Length: 115
Figure 1 (cartoon, one colour):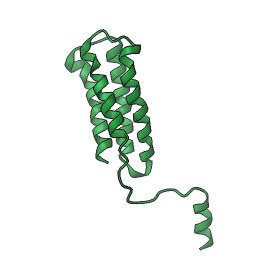
Figure 2: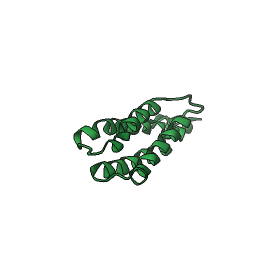
Figure 3: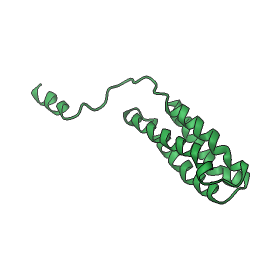
């Protein structure tokens, strides 16, 4: 659970960094949008039953790695998204132990009815 919460902290940092480091333009907009999604999916993935959503943060982290080059960030302060992207990918790749089994699909309905 802690890696997903840490990923959310990275997302909150990306949301706040344009105001704290005072940069604007496409870097500001990208970091605020991706930061909000990163924080949201990080908190959602902290729940064991929907932990597979952590792969959304891997995709968002990958975008953070390529965005400075594709969007041509004008300011080196905005390139903190590179570090945030690498950290988000690393933290979202940690699976962690599962204490319960969830789901079962349609067969779970038939198993319960036959008992």
